[in-house]
Length: 327
Image (cartoon, one colour):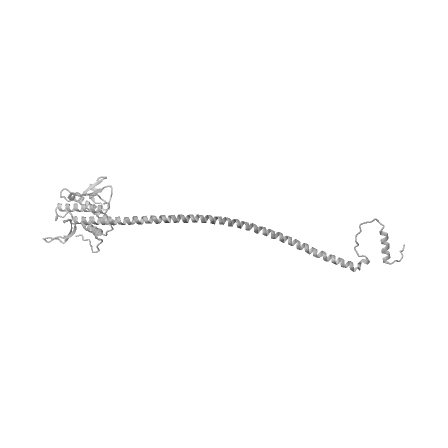
């Protein structure tokens, strides 16, 4: 069947009339514009406006999303900063409490130091007063000692005299000798030029002199002295060993206890070695006195020369010209 030759527009009308009575279905837009719509300027302008409106809307949505994210981040940062500020405030308050406590402790310490300084000043004043009193007491004691030693020097004067010999003496015979209270005390107590009584009496004077000087200077003697004038003696503790111990100490000493050594001469009654060892002990006592007082001396000096130097040191001060002639 051949359709008549109608124009295209009339054919479209006929198709529309045929289709319209059909049941109404949801109309779908045609994938192509109709002929009368394809060249409609008004429809094109509407589509352009709609597209232009849709583009800013998408841009606004993206901007809003970015802004919301930025706000959330900013809020989180603000919260973190607030937390840090709160922690700093807590630390600051704790530090302030510590400063207040430290200030209180410091004030208490300063008060205690001030009290201690006041007590120290009081103690220093007391010590100064006691030191002054002690100095005065020592000065008076030393003056009293000097006075006693001066009196003792008058009682037992020590002098160096010249020995007058009528005959021709030997070359080694001494030209000088020391005397105590006018009695000579030779270097060799066993010499026959002096009698037993003179030697014993001079040794007794020396024992008294040493004992009194020890008492006045408050210096204990190493070996106790028994002062019996011309029958004096000295005690030795046999349990103590000394250097240079001679045969007399070993032969006459018992196993222990005190041993008495004579300081007098009596021919036929006193052993010579015992007398010599007694003189050694007496010289040790004299050396102890000199060392305690800081007096310089020589071991070769006469025992009376040593005692004379000690008295000069205490009473008059050290004499540089003193030579300690042994006679």
